[in-house]
Length: 342
Image (cartoon, rainbow, N blue to C red; front, side, top):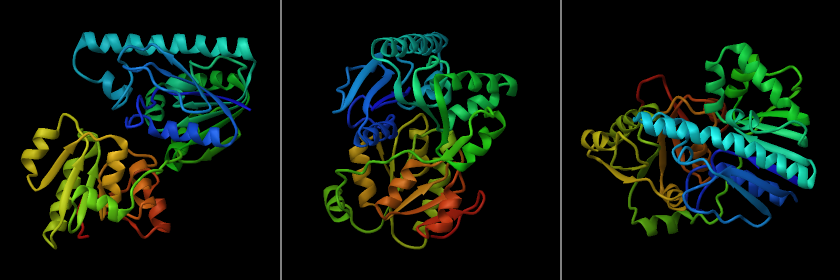
């Protein structure tokens, strides 16, 4: 069986946090017996294709990469922004040509999997390239489609259905699927919710992780980009509330423009900056709790990883986490904008 995966985010190295969920999905396809052709933006350094994967890297300048194309296009500087917009356009045009070439040379695919509806399913996928297509909506693409006139968004998605005989819409959360409902073409009958695969292979056991990082006592983590939308300040306020009840240590993993301001405001916390994915998961395995205050997540990967490792989570209601909390007592939802005692 042959599968084509197209994505605008994919790790440049095994330690790169960007697009790790796409890498997990590709690994899952390979384990199911698919031979995967993977089309992604070219990184700063050539990637090494995993076993069972044929890699097609398409030039896109510096438009893509951590912390995501939307964030990179929002950075200040008109020339930088214009260059990155041009990079996105080049990736879409050349990526479509690469996919068309693959189909001409080898025939149609059994499955095409497109991460992000826009850019991704449209306009990168040409018509008739696969028997079955699976579009995966992650969140940023849904918000982009919602900002468009509804007729335009519906037309784009309808045109993208021509890529395969059968098209399946898969959202990573129920919230996203509900948001997409008014824009989804009636021809797409198969609509489902399925979070992306997570891969915790190689993560050390709790005792080993704590020894490795010199952790003693109760450790709480905040793992997020240090930008306004992640509301790391709210999570740090919650950590202060917990620390008034008992001794804890607080560590922040992630980087961003708010780092210096947060360090001055919350001197009780240790800021480690951006870590590689294996190192971040090792710290998570060592932790007693995870704090998250973001309100814009669909199916937060870090929360799913924390619970898979047995780490308690305190978070605000975002995406599907309230649904998860009904079945998982290890997830506690913080009420509204306020704080509670842990």
